[in-house]
Image (cartoon, rainbow, N blue to C red; front, top):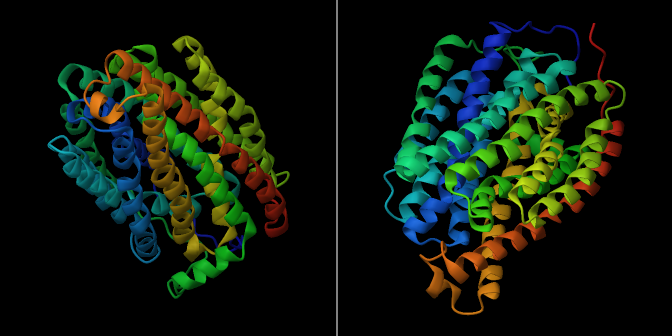
Length: 447
């Protein structure tokens, strides 16, 4: 249930500065999360890694620690300063990203990526909780979408600047250049953003136990359906983030800087448009019928899936760019809105924990399972396409001849297979639409 309307504490501080600075922190969050995908092909060639190992670096190593610590840190956010928590975890993930540039082996890379996951675990739940306290319910999807736009900008910066640094100075320099600015933002955050008062949760309000939170969300079919659907969407979305640049390099013969530019347009720019329009559409539709928070993303996935599959099939990178642009925009449009509507399904002091549980499902499925499964399947299909001892022959020769062709074919077919999980997401979103209508009242129109 959502909070009552009476007795709300007005937000403090500058709303524009809050949205801007938290957006910049979210941007660095995404840059440090995805720079491994930009540098991944260069790392793979330098250290002789497989796609499975790349999936472990970009997915499981990050997501396990992100998921394991996300819930304890969310519990901390319900008791302590969320601004202080975000400043601390931003510093941690930024430093660990920079240290990745000094790694000399797969194991060292794995440890650094685990550190990035530890740092980022405390960010999203605390952010979503603060948004719920600073903004009325009819504006939350729009506010979160405004901040989430910076995720897409971060993807563009990571792909373009990161791709150029990788191509010009090497992959190690890219981690240092894109890691350290987050420390500066952490200091600004701590000095300039006040902690928002918690709405309808006075000083005497006890924070519910984690067991109480689990029982609450367990009684909410809408929460469970939305989390399951977002996890399946994450499997495709995170897979694209991690493996699009390797696909562009192997299949179309582009260098990493060129592939980064295409990534910036096909994925990052499309997400800016999708997230911004999706958040505002969700607020507008949700005031008429809360079921639209489930129906709208389901309908867009019906559009996105065939566009995604057609893009992967293209032999010309220009058609890939056009089709993937629209596929990615419709794929990601409503994810910020879904995160905010789950906050209405729990009490105020449960919000950070609920956000962490939702992020747990999305991250474990998308990054942990999806990226690793995609990397494993790519290696298997590449070995089949090669016909010989692919691992022995192609460990450091993926840039040439039959090895390059096999690696491109294996990754292409693996990404197409991964896209089929969107069928399950469509079903879950439609079921969530019915559950939301039963569990929530309509969103009030703004005064």
